[in-house]
Length: 239
Image 1 (cartoon, rainbow, N blue to C red):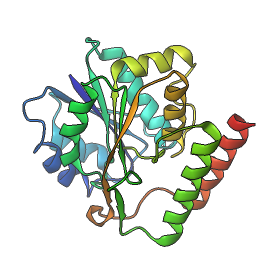
Image 2 (cartoon, helix red, strand yellow):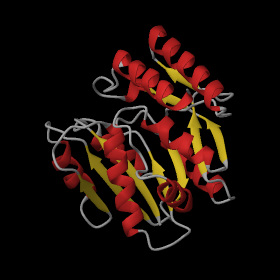
Image 3 (cartoon, helix red, strand yellow):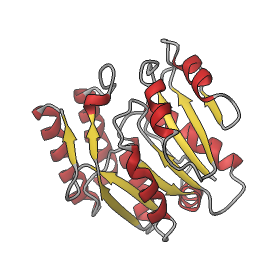
């Protein structure tokens, strides 16, 4: 089974296009969609239920907005509680259609070759950020550089939502920590990657383009708030 974990927050306009893209790939695979709603108030939950149905989909969440880290943790915990096979795979993807889903079949194949985590990386050779302003690119590049150096992480992209995990690596992270993800904000992706690498997880990156032009509406990430969270995480974990 491939579980596709998707955090959602006020993405009602993007969900129909996301469905079209996801339903066009991996048609010979067993897929189950796990949407983790972070307190949407624009009807996103209802749109997901209408578009994806209930047979191979569940929408989680208690209606409270806490952040993508909390939403991811809820989704991962549901998968760990419901997975029945040690060969299951967990894919995580953006809900706003900015992830290039045509890369996902290749990520799945590479995961099955024995890699614990496959990262879709905008900073790997051949990757790029589409229509992203200079300040955001600069802050992202500096943050990635500092965190890679201080935590001895060899990956180029640390914060992308777009990944594939084996069920085994998630179980190992959970066994070694009280929570899979403690951070509630966007830094959650660095946190779980950092935990995985400390457990000697095998990680590989594939280049991708973050397609911001396909998003309807604005990004939910607040640059200043997220930058401060990176600084806080650095102080708590590197010194």
